[in-house]
Image (cartoon, rainbow, N blue to C red; front, side, top):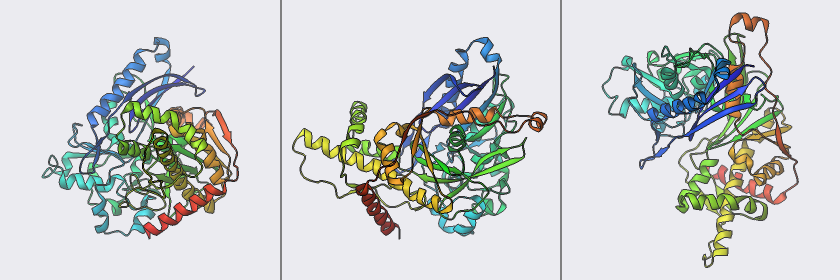
Length: 497
């Protein structure tokens, strides 16, 4: 039996996971990583620590495997948080922190671009936003002390996945796959290479960017092994693959730090409100599939924001987690939470609005029971705000092409109350996947694809691994929830107009 290795480097942890040829998890190791919120609003990670966390998880996993299993690891795939970046020298030494995908320090550059927002979205498939890498690269080149005055031809402008590949491949390849390249907002989504118009507009030197490659391609051998890296893609792209690729009438909602709604497109089609992305590309099959995507920045991040507002310690957060399911079941009239945590993503695309609660009970908290209800109501309000933002995007997707089913994955999907509310609000069946690790499973599956021209000519792309459904939630009419959604939608429309 063949085995497939998945490396999943995310915002809060690095994972190494091993799957068999049926997509069944055989072994896993997880290494936590730190995210730093600076006083100036910048959000950063330590690129060297991220690399070490990947190596540590890999070494622990491979070290625990039998010789027989290690000899039958057919290939490896790497998936990574998108739009996170680092600048390094051409020996691979990091010269800057890793700037998080959540960081928006490049916002001022967007007002002075020589291209219109419409032209940027036509070329890149992405709305003009400082969440993507281009403006952050520009900020680093202009402001970071270690980079000022350095010739740009001595630098690598490295999306995080390229930085990792530079160190994890035996021949130190500086490359990038199509899905990560697109999230820099510097790649032409149809030409599948760096855009002269976009790189010129952002004043980004093309010779400092990595070589663009399909998601399925030869990425070299994993360091200290004979295992070929045959697939690389972004974390949400991998989650779509790990959920069975779905069909044109269904959508995947992956609920993590952010929430992402993805659906496969039957053919390439632009959108002015949502994102167009790459679902699959292969050097061997010479094929490209596209996807439609929506981005909600304040999902798990919104709950973390609330914990920070309450100044809770780990024990208090754990107690809150135990109470949340009961609150979702019993609290029927929470306040509205205007969820702008991390900036409004699709379809609003707005940054400067502060998050706040509306219509909350502000009577004195004079006893423990009242305090618990107060916290519970706010918690339910935050959960509902995530669903309201998702629903805004689902209604736009439905206008393009009808949806008949929603599939949920990610940590927040484990909340039954959230799943039922989403079914009620969308009036669509919601199925929750049993496997929480759709991202790692997706990149492992992608690495299992035929990886040479002869093999690919004899075999079509392998069908997605079978998925297991944990539970399906059928929609129930909930007029009060719909009314709160309409009020929420009205408020956001007013605030962003």
